[in-house]
Length: 454
Image 1 (cartoon, rainbow, N blue to C red):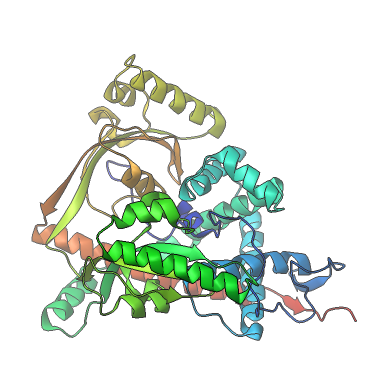
Image 2: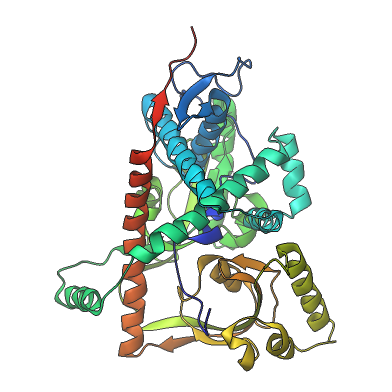
């Protein structure tokens, strides 16, 4: 790795942020009206004997595995206000997704890809951070909800293994040429390609329990309406969210982030369409409960005239037969402790110990635009305040200790605008390449579907 960390916006631990762990429960039951694959029992019903649903290259997928996945997917969709598929469709999609994952894991094993426990530890910390809890509290909730810790960690390990396989198999296929950049800029200037609308929303959720009585639903609706009225009267929305919301983003004031409209549930897009920046949506009802949205920002996506930049430095250690991931993490934690206690200087430690090309500059990565670093690195960087040092972060390059120096907004030069476009196009091509690769993996696998026992 050189002075810059190569950006791959769809790889790495960023996928873990979407793991459906909710603030009020880590393994909720399937909402009413959602059935499982034919012959499968609801998680909340009497436990049935397990059986094989499908076989992928001689490896089985069981009924219990599918039931657990359906519960998570259904709860996540309800939490986000997404429209629920038909009973047959949700069953089909869950099983098909598990078939693809199984085929990918088999290919990863054949390629000799492994993930050490230390990387799983850091992934577990990432899930805890996404849910605004520490790891001990995360594990307590897992136990309360009946999800064994070993199973949870094995699923994290599998996600990491597949992510590393995708990076190795797909990244080399993705190329963005100067002609691609020229065509994109030309389309933007002539209006041939209309850039999508991007919105940033904050959400306050009043959850409605499954099978709630009409009286309870009415009570919760009244509570939600009262909070909406208070927000309209001028009370701080973020404070109302932190004090009252049942959503997983409550600690951050409910902020969901700037993203294209097609990455929000249609319920949210429709509810916010005619709401000005700073305004509030009407009360919205989904399978998860009652939602109140505040529109934080709206803009037309495209090539920005300016960009928020970060100035950071890091120390990189590359695990090897002589340096295990656990030893690398312990060494970085010692560096962090020494810097924070005033016993050492971050730049000096980087010069003496970092295994990156930036070591000679004290680990200084210079001013960086969004998307310039790999997602797992950038996600942690965005969470830091100036002067703050991160916990150890794993990427495909090794293990990092990151310090944010400062932030700024800066006008982009024409050359920098071209690099922004290059990153946009690379992300789009990566999505297409990942989709094609997954289809190829699925096509090569032998899959046998089985009927439930009579």
